[in-house]
Length: 368
Image (cartoon, rainbow, N blue to C red; front, side, top):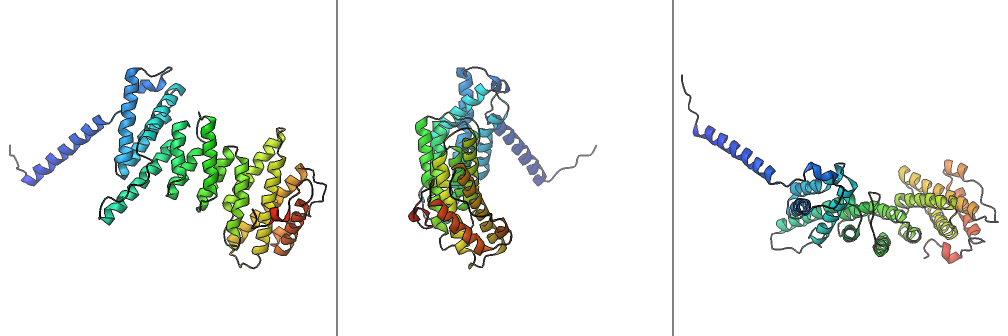
């Protein structure tokens, strides 16, 4: 039998490959896990179970906060995964509380650290890494049961300097699972959302802020925001109305549901009608001379049609004794902006009469 000798380089490759496999296995063994049987607990964690979960959470929060991008994402996925394994309600509640408490106590949502040296490239890289940390922390928060710790995290995210972090912070407010919030925290959340919506410059974040306020039943804050944000469109006819339109439509739907269930909605309908009239007047005045592209003109036209619908619904619900303007269907179909402007002016006159009783200042497009 003949033996063929390998070059030293060949043996070196084999040894390196074996080392990589051994190290990977060691790393996998070092990664903490939660035993499958724990997911179906029906009572408080035992001392051993609590240590197991806390060790697991500590490990992946450290990875989320201190790792590079791949490790950050892995940490996020591992923190979220136990909530998605069909565990018992008892397990999910206890696990969520532990993650929320430890994340809130961590450095995950700290304000960006100041540059630590003269290496500009390294500083930019670290700043970018910190954004990824905060963004992924908001993604984790969106999957947790809302309690005071989760809201503390979200409140920091809503006012973050990075719009992507702000977006995911507001997304964490919308929808999702259960909520165990004290009224004080609910009020703080609504106040922060309402304050941020009036200063936010990114359209998609504005949209999410308005929808979050609607979900929190904060109709007054949404109405105030709608009537405030019209200022951003004065003398800027090319700005689109996506977020305003979605908020107005969602709020109209909510008011209709409340009305059908016997709730008093007069003041909400009045203020929504005020916003609708102001937007309708501004758009019909600015659009004809703005030489808009087809897509932007269509956006404006959709907003005018929605405003007219809001006004008709409010006119009927509040039983106005003044006749409503004629239908705008033909004018809208033909893009007859002069006729649409006439309709807006007519609605303005209607809203100055009972039961609306608005003043000229109330209805001015640049007014408060």
